[in-house]
Length: 152
Image 1 (cartoon, helix red, strand yellow):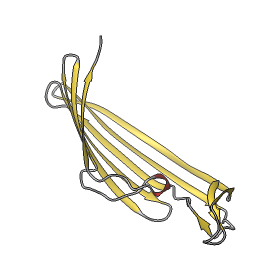
Image 2 (tube, one colour; image 1 turned 45 degrees about the vertical axis):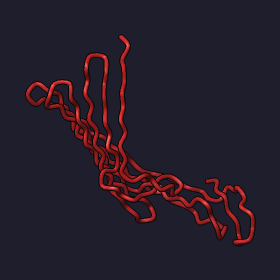
Image 3 (spheres, one colour; image 1 turned 90 degrees about the horizontal axis):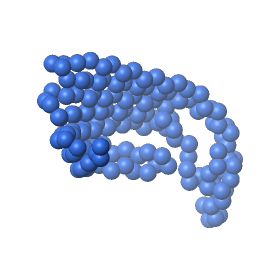
């Protein structure tokens, strides 16, 4: 694993191969399709588990510590109850190797009118504070609008 490290706080950062990491795990995903009043529905669930065996670094300071997902559960329900309207609600629970965990809920809806699709996505609707790769903070709740035209 390559990281920017140093021995003393006054030393400059240097890229070094600092650790050996052995990663083991598994993931699974299930998809259940069904119909309600002739409309298609999809229920999807997935789970992944990762175990990192890290040999300790000899350096005192590290810019990017290993903080991978240990457990992650994702689920989504894509539903249609009206013609040309689709809705999806999704949930993600994640626990990192450092012990921190969070849950994020997203919602999306779209309307199809001939070759056009108009969409609205509400991401992180409960304003969960969390970080991703390299401890980068992710945005709080936000909206995205979309317009798509399909050439046929």
